[in-house]
Amino acid sequence: MFHKEGIVSIAIAVSVAAILSIVAFTVEMPVWTQILLLLLAAFVLIIILQFFRNPSRKTILDDTTIVSPVDGKVVVIEKVTENEYFKDERIMISVFMSPLNVHVTRYPVGGKVAYSKYHPGKYLVAWHPKASEENERTTVVINHKNTAQILYRQIAGALAKRIVNYATQDDSIVQGADSGFIKFGSRVDVYLPLDAIITVELNQKLKGGESILAKFTDE
Image (cartoon, rainbow, N blue to C red; front, side):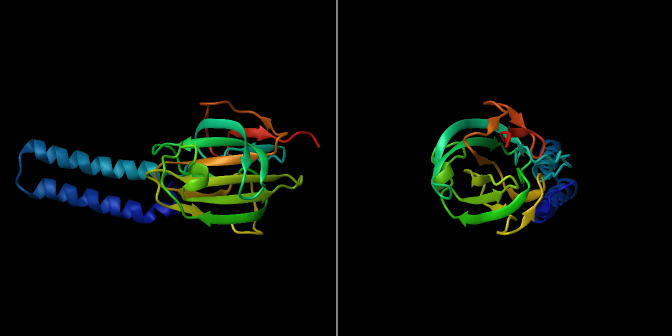
């Protein structure tokens, strides 16, 4: 299963692979060159197909948990000041996605979208400390039913040149549902209440929509 955002890229990759294959079989050339062209055709197609894959995920809907919005590795867990929306201290968990990860973004909790904004910006490497505030990015805030607010931020990296965000203010959304896509290497930051119970650790690998980042404290 492939993500709808990859339709054009997949079509181009198929065309390129087909052209390279046709050239390899119709133009006179050394055998090693023919093999090289066929390998290049296969490489281009495989890379694009794997990048836009959209595997089915079984999110266990739970109003007490915050799930990871993306696949990737936890690279930051720290208390920070969030300056765009909350303007106060929050716990930030950053998940870095390599080009080999699934790049679908999913809603970490269910509720209603309170805020959704796109910011143009730079293309620093995704793990750069200033990437969260200076890179191209989108910020989404969700009002959870328990009155808590969860913010997540899609951040473009040095290769990612396009962020897709489906969240629209006042939308009612379901935990784990598709909320967007980021192309070619990037990161997502999730900002949690200070009393959230963190359930992940640094360098842990996560699955979007399934791995639990944190839990809300008992009300």
